[in-house]
Image (spheres, rainbow, N blue to C red):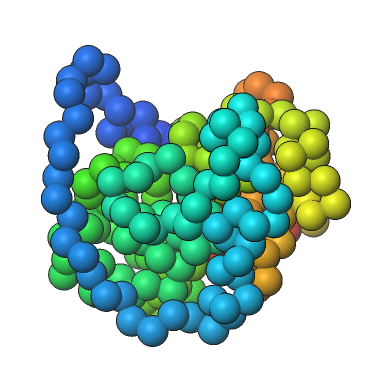
Length: 221
């Protein structure tokens, strides 16, 4: 399940990144959009999500606190359990679509819709919605990094150094994939392996009920 999910993420991002590498990025203004009331558990996760669980990894942020994800939609350096830019965990798909922030979408099953995005985050992240609410943001690139400074391309030993007792190495139920899990209230950061080389190949954040459960048990699709 993990290898298929990674291949899907990497394939979509590869298609988007097929544009000339030297093309200047286009600054697309992204409208401010209110995406509904904060989901349950937001108060529990906000402090940890903005980097107060520990100092930022000096190799990524020079030892400074990373600050909250979502303060500005133009900041594509950070991905936390709050989400990324305007793509906040718990946000409604219909409102993000109406704001012009959703590119393509594919309905799978069990009420899950996977989408690409527009603007500065295009080609950087993919989204998963369940019953119309954002439950997962994933990336196969670096940046973005977590508030602690972890991201794709690192190895699990580096993650253990960054997170210490706050994280744990886990395996899926079939024993075919390993990952590194960091719990932040009812949400998680999940770093999973690369299908070809050692180390982190994908970085996901979202609700534990969706992200962690999907990794451990596999999806219903």
